[in-house]
Length: 263
Length: 248
Image (cartoon, rainbow over all chains, first blue to last red):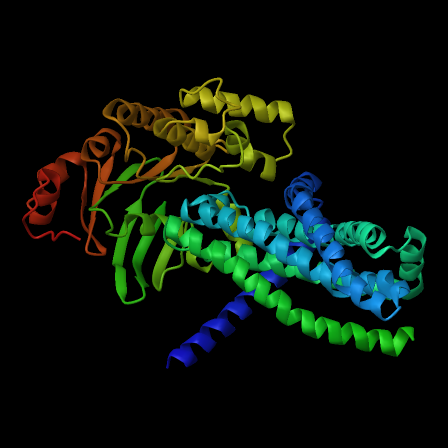
């Protein structure tokens, strides 16, 4: 019985999130058509979601790039394959690590903040107040957060890739004994544009997932401060689980696409 | 005129409204009294379309609000203002942005005109010069008054007050009541006030309805309520712990 209820709840939540996503698209089109789209709101959210996450993302990217070179560099050096270090690290970063790690950091920082903000608005009747002033909460609250999160995940992942490569190159030069030119040539030789684009596409999808789940958890908040706390935690956990699950299918889809059209 | 006809509403197994019937006339100030948690706010939310009843109708000028689509509901809400129990000011916006919210979303007024209207409404609620304060910098009474300024910014025909004086000191309560009466006089609005504050109810009402057990058990003028032979009414207005009205 518990399992049936759990599955029922899961299906209901997924259905509600899909409806919220569709409503977001509808209200975006509606706002663009009616000339009501507010760039100020969007830029405010982009600043809060993106710019304020830069330091965390930079530390994550730098550390990951550096550690990857340490782990891979000595092994490759033993086999005399140092010239592949830059390429292998850049591939790992571009295809998987940059989009996944950036998304997890943003899910922790931004997904929780979105759920807490909207959840607090819900329990303090601010969402009802919006409706009484003939303003749709999806239009006013979700649309700017959704697009800001989606766009900024794309941008932040580019940033993570660059910082990761800087971290990796510093370790490669000072610890593995590679030259900057050799590291760079290895990257240029092995990394293809489709590897970068595939990773950035994934990050964009993850951005949409984080915003949708954060907003959904906010709207479904019940009770007082405890309810907000639960929603916040749940937004982060569900976002990370969804990112990891969706990542598998995206990876398979992108690989199939690359094989069919780009090779 | 607002006609509430046989409204039923349940939340899970709990039946909150069990066939509420009520008429509110244009320009009237109707106070809905009742113990805490009896469903007064739920009733108010049905009037503005924030909740849909399980059964029954809410007729405003002959049209059933419960069947409205979003567009019609939004058009109706432009004619209404609501003061929430917690004031429900938007935390991230300052006082001016809060009061101007509806004006900026639904009119093409210039920034100067909007600022002028906001300042005028803040003056009306006794808070001139507070335009750029954030909600977190306001006291409870000030928040309620800003909430009221926001509710009247679009000059609505109907204002719904959800516990406008709860948590306020007697002087602030009196100030809010006077404001209510002056708004009624100056703007001629229809008011529906949900409260359990008897003093305040007597001050602002044209009529009082007592809501208990999911129904309106008594309705009348202040004198009719005070002199009602209904034991439920007498227990409530005397504030007695024992009687036919059970503690929730």
